[in-house]
Amino acid sequence: MTSSPPLIITAPPSKSVSHRALIRAALANGVSRVAGVLESQDLERTRACLAAMGAKITGSGGEYEVTGVAGRPHGGEKTPVVLDVGESGTTCRLIVAVAAAGHGLFEVTGRGRMHERPVGELTRVLEGLGAGVAFLGRPECPPLGIQARGLSGGTAEITLEESSQYLSGLLLASPLAAGPLTILVTGKKAVSWPYVAVTLAAMADAGVPVTVETTRGEAWTVTDPATITRAEPGRIRFLCRPGAYAAGTFRVEGDWSNASYFLAAGALGTRPVRVANLRRDSAQGDTAMVDILRRMGAQVTQDATSVTVFPSPLSGIDVDMGHCPDLVPTVAVAAALAVGPTTITNVAHLRIKESDRLAALADNLGRAGARATVLADGLRIEPGLIPPHDTVSFATYDDHRMAMSMALFSLSGIDTRFDNPGCVAKSFPTFFDEWSKVTS
Image (cartoon, rainbow, N blue to C red; front, side, top):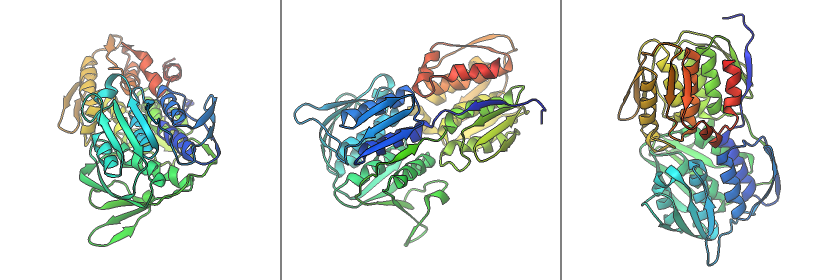
């Protein structure tokens, strides 16, 4: 390992946990204090939607006081309350379910690619539980109208082939239902299970635990979510009971997704990088970045709250990233700078993110001289970079993760340029300020 002292970066607050912390506080009866909330465009949209449904949210700089709606999101009587989710897919899918559990009329709208991102699987389930849904533009995509009459409880089946956020939204809304709700995961596969684990942890912390059961045959067995590494359709179900979210004081942990760029930089650069504010015991699926880097040959040390990565030659690997899809852009760039090919699988759902991330990655890696082949469910990447000191203009596709991951190419000597660097405001507004510490 190099003897150079590590550059220390503090991971920003988790975007996923921030969304869930604000939602549970907004649904509670009483006043909550939520600290360490990520300041970004996506979280602005979630706060605005919760306020439109009746929650009172005051504060700034990541510190918020939230007076909840006591389990009753308020819609309009004759005119719908507008819930503008912007370009935040997480906001959309969680808020659609929460609004459907309320009462009154809502209109969920957004902008840009949001009107092409499907929510039909979620709304199908919500209609079965008593909500009225009308798509106002493209079928199964926002904008949409919701006539909310509360959720009935009962039994629901949902597939997670496109997004785990459908289930997370339904779970967050389930305590507001009129009766117990059993949710069975169906379909051919379930992606991004760790995000469901984050949702379950947030709910349990606020006094509304969900019972998880799994089966290998006829009998269902209560299972600790912390022991589940992936959801198997037909073999996992969730028993939800009516209840009340407890008001309280919550602190948001650091974001493993946004830390991934700096962890990769430790391996690809000339100086170790230590990223602080990363819980080793986090339920976030993107803790997988540590294992992936190690498999690629990086030297990594970890303690309870930080990870240090040392400059290391990397080698290509074959990796299933269905449980950590937000890491794919980071790993794809690391693979382009490694020795030997890398194959990333089980991420077909990346086609319906902020961009078609498979096609966008293939385009941008090609601009840097690597060869990326889009597969049915992933990418195959073969290194082959252009000489250092050349300038490469990358297309962000208005996708925050595309911009942040392509910045890693600057560590190979490439002068990186971006058509819309400001798109990082969606999840990490200060990214390029922090990144300048890596490249200085």
